[in-house]
Length: 250
Image 1 (spheres, rainbow, N blue to C red):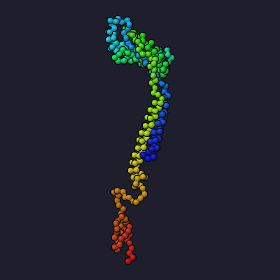
Image 2: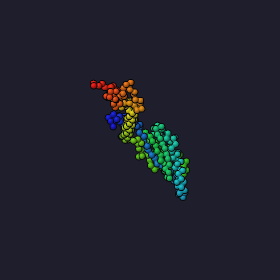
Image 3: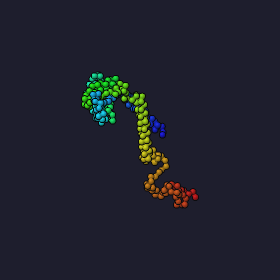
Image 4: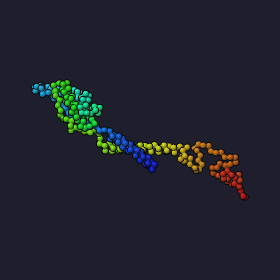
């Protein structure tokens, strides 16, 4: 690799590195999103006779009750009411609920821009939506197994990790692009050198006369031998150079 190729690859790598840093700066500038999770359990109500509890557990094992409760808790009306109660815009909050397979558990997940506000929204959704969910699921109770407090986590990656990852990716991409550009340039230049019309082609360089393959040889003039004939015999027996008879001093 010559100096020009090294400069091309280095410049492309630098451009890729700067592009990666700018992309990382844009991502880091995005506000963080926090997530809190509340886990609920569906159990037979205390009013159920003890002799009938096994049958209720059999019903719960089918998963219909916790799926119904999850659908009720995920309704937008609870999100809007909880956000208004906490003082957070409903558009900035996302609430989802899902039943855990083969269990009677329900996970309520809330995402928001503020850690404390996200926890408060999760608690408000459970408090507002639980009475309705219990009514539609039948003679069951919804109990909180795990509260949202203590489960908050930041979904955004650490800024240092973002900068390092995107800078490395940009650098590698730039180096690869530089190698590709240099290879294309050298290939194009080589193909032009193979063209007789290109100034660097050997046939275009000054030097001895070269006759193109297949071209007709020049015909000598009257009384002249071809220039490239080995020797020409003169009429008086002497040799001539270039087709001109040599004079004899004898």
